[in-house]
Image (cartoon, rainbow, N blue to C red; front, side):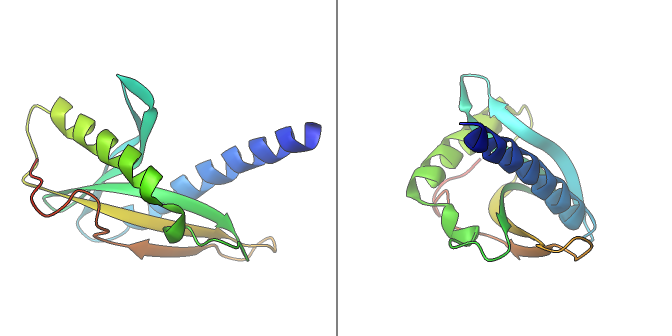
Length: 139
């Protein structure tokens, strides 16, 4: 039982570390700025957006997947059909709550691979413009 609890706490801290690394990585790109982190839909707290960023005038919703080096399932592939459905609802709720609607939105996935050896740099892969909302959806 304690081992499962330790694994759960470790996953939480590695997920937080991955989100901080992704935020720093994206924020260092020219034209990118931070908007929000860990936004939850007030009507359904299970719906969460890891990062909301701006890439120029585009509002970007970012799902961050943190993995240990050598993980069996890459972070990009962990955003499955069920996760996309939850993210779609969260994005729509976020945009509906805005007074000033964005002209364009995008969904990105950032995969953070935590190194095995201390002192080694993490691996960060950015997958921009991942299909989520469909071509006809407008904010």
